[in-house]
Image 1 (cartoon, rainbow over the protein chains, first blue to last red):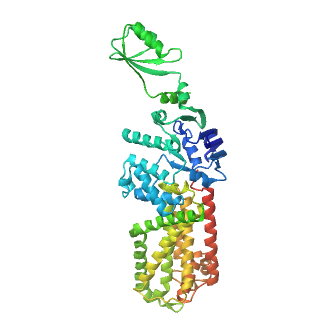
Image 2 (image 1 turned 90 degrees about the vertical axis):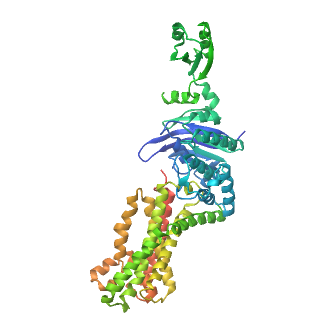
Image 3 (image 1 turned 180 degrees about the vertical axis):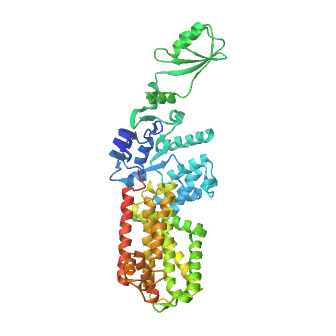
Length: 303
Length: 257
């Protein structure tokens, strides 16, 4: 049985203004998981990360990271975690190399080891040729990669990424995904929060959804998707559907023989295909409309 | 963290602070030298020649220890408050917060930066004073002890101000309304023996008076107050502020939500 990377029990957080950000949540991540924590802005995702990294004080509850208790073994917890926060939090006037190397020093590395690790992570994240540049001169995507490099310099067992691909273009995002997949494959447990829900489908085995400080869904991504009881498909046909067929299918006519049709347990994809076939039209293509996780997310959030 | 790792962490933080001071030397080292030189010229040369002797010392020579100490106090305080608050403001303080670096290392890392700048500025101002008068040095040990501890006290003060500060205005309030008045009234430009009795008593409530006088004693062997008493006050301030800074960081005041 795999060890637990994160074990959270009855975790609550009430901020000084009285806002209850977390309401007695339980959450576990096994070693080696690639786990997504989803939720709308203000749902409590960043509070969970803040507590795990020592930036936010919990009000109540038990938090363990690789078996180390946050209250009594804070140093062991901190040594296990690398964190990439949502906002840029480095000195923009400092050089890329200095930012990463110094972080190694804060984790107690001697200058030689910090330099070796810095070179390794900067090369891995394709920032080595920018090492002497001031971080202010980097593009948004490079700044994100810089924060990932900094988080990895002490070789943590758990990497926490709070919306790491925000503002990163598609090509860079895909490159970052590949790197994160490789890290996970090599044994790093990853906890990710993101607003790009396609990221969850692409990367994660497990996901939890947090709403108003409570975990409302927590399962494998596959099982979560099975919970989605409705999905919209876009059908393209070789000729127009009859008005009767459109009525039966409750289809939305987008013109040029393109239709949006809902599927559900009562009205399956096969049922829809059969109705279209009976209307003497041939199906040219069927595509899901939008991201499935996004649909699930929206259905949960709107409840 | 073991002792070697703690040392590595401390060295990382202090070298960052020292590099910053040297990188922006036109902001950190030059201004106090220019300001204090103007004091030498105006108060020392122009006005001082009309003042005569204080405690048997020419006025120009009398004010040099005070002016050096004034530069040390301002440089130490402003270095730590600005560095710490800027780190908080840009959130790069989180780099240390998420690491296992102990809070006492954070305290002494920032304070070491402040002491480095304070002593460097003090040394430069002292060397500049040689253009105007050659001060005597009677007791280098007392000079070193007082300047070092004073720099520590105000570095710690700057750190505590930085911990509580939430906006840039908060960084300016203490130096403007407390530190500068106390420094000017701390016996830099005069001996409190020249004041009426009541103002002598009021002056003795000002901790900077003891720092300036203890420091001046190291140069000329004269002081308005007991040097031993001054040393104890300085030591008490150093220890109390270090403990307070540590408690504040442990509690996460101004750092953790």
